[in-house]
Amino acid sequence: MSGSSTPDWLAHFQAGFGAILREPLDRETGTLTARVDRYAPETVREIRDAANASAAARLAVYNRQYWFRLFSVLHTAYPLTTRLLGAWRFNTLAQAFLSAHPPRTWTLDDVPEGFDDALPALLGDDPRREVLSEAARLDAHWRRLFHAPDVAPFRPGPADAARLPDARLIPSPRVALWRERTALLALRLQLPPGLDRPLALPSAHPASAWFALCAEPNGIRALPLDPREGALLALLARHPVRDALALLEAECACRASATALPAKTQRWLAQSVARGFWAGFADGAAQSHAHGMTQVYPVQVLRPAPRLRPRARSQRSTGKMAERRSRLHRRATDIAGDVEKVRDSGTEDVGDDPRRHGWDANQPSASFCEQQRRQPESHSHEEIDPCSRHEEIRNEVGVGIGRDRRFDVLGIITRGGEGSRNATR
Amino acid sequence: MPFVPELIELAAERAAYVQRRLGRPFGLENLSSYVDFTRSTMTEWDFVSAVVREAGCGLLLDVNNVYVSSRNHGFDPDDYLRAIDFSRVLQVHVAGHSCEPDGTLVDTHDHPVTDDVWALYARAWRMGGPFPTLLEWDERIPPLDEALAVLAHARAAREAAESPQTAPDPAHRDASRLPFSNPAFDAKNPMLR
Image 1 (tube, rainbow over the protein chains, first blue to last red):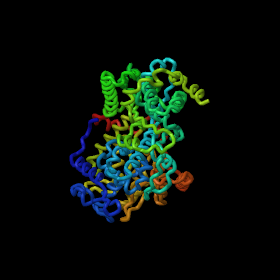
Image 2: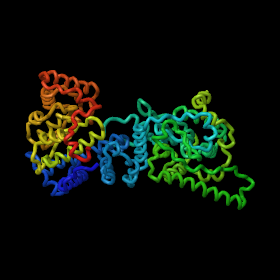
Image 3: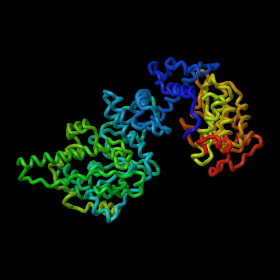
Image 4: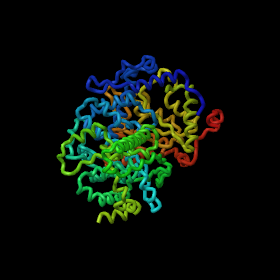
């Protein structure tokens, strides 16, 4: 667009007016007060005093409304976080976030983007930091699901069966996998009215609880998942099907659980397909099978994982085996690096980034993993922590349920709902 | 921006460009104003009318904004309405506002529409109705029955008004047409050719 140019005096005034809008409000007095003394005098001089207010006081109306509107947008996007922090503390953090990340697009819908990522640093050494950050992530999942496009679910056909073992399933943007240590989801579903007084933190679960959050026409539905089912879905979102199944089996240390795992895995896989958890798959042949969503979410293909072979127990102590383990460890690290590169590339390829869809539930911070490992085993069932021991498993476990096909996983996937019904009986 | 003749073409050019790119009627809305520029040499209604006329676009007439600005700057809101070419009005907005401690009115969209605004709405209807009406309510949104009561209030305000004297051509609201385009203005602006 080219046409008449903005006169210099107008451009200068508009820049000054923009600076006044963004001038942070003073919180020292216990109320949100505009700092009119910080307004540029040359900008204030462009305004006439009114009968009931000075020019600066009238400019302050815009200044306050700018911030109140943005606070309101963030309250709407992060209702649980707002209630746990209380409106005053939340606004303090929101102002710090917005000062560092002023809105740069035409829509207010973009304003809350990134607040959940910034919150841990903003909270500093707040003893509730972990839970509050978790609450912000839950709010962020909710918001992304609310805006998720209506993507057709993946319904695999028989022709897909041969490619699926080495393919990675692509999570639907309409589903988020959620794991929590504190009962945040239940609180978010029934937030009491009021804004000002911070709510007490909800109680902790005896072990992590898993849910699938699904965007549906009537709202967002939370489906409770078996912990191992949640771990399976998280693994499938990040690894080729074959490796995901092997990793899941390797995590199952209890013999009784391992015996029941194949049947359960069949059922969970079939249910995930029937419930529309997947949007397609990506494989090493750089082809996608994302029904109805390829144009909106172009699939980015990751390098296929290296094949893992059964470890020979008789060679466990040999130097040759140690060398091989070291080599495999490096390869596994390379894969992790590739995943991180994709994540860090800043691509808009949201269809292939599990984190954008809330499928990173098995990818909490290292400190969280460490904390989980230190927890006493006070709960009744096995705690699943798929972020732990991945490299170790890749080195030490070669025989997996996905590898020797002790059950017909692919058949169940490709039959979809039929498999689900059979498995449920 | 200050209301000066120098800026009419600048604003009109941009409005016409948007309308051209959208390919459908585009309406500029009058804003609630809290500041009065020392550089202004025109009234807001003269400036807005000139921009709309030059651009060949429509107008979204917000009667709450007219009322808020009239109180903040001390003009007669009826003067504003009398300057409006209602044949260009695509839609009329009503909303609630808040009052600051110093008496400044702020267009917050979080209160019921005041009686004064309803009265202004009725006068606008009398001058240029019928027109589509939009209630703006962004925060502290009331229950549905209260919102429906506002709808009933709008209907009552219309019925209380005299019969419309100026019924705009319904084609003005046809989204497939650009009813107000100004070929003369377009011809002298390179970005609009």
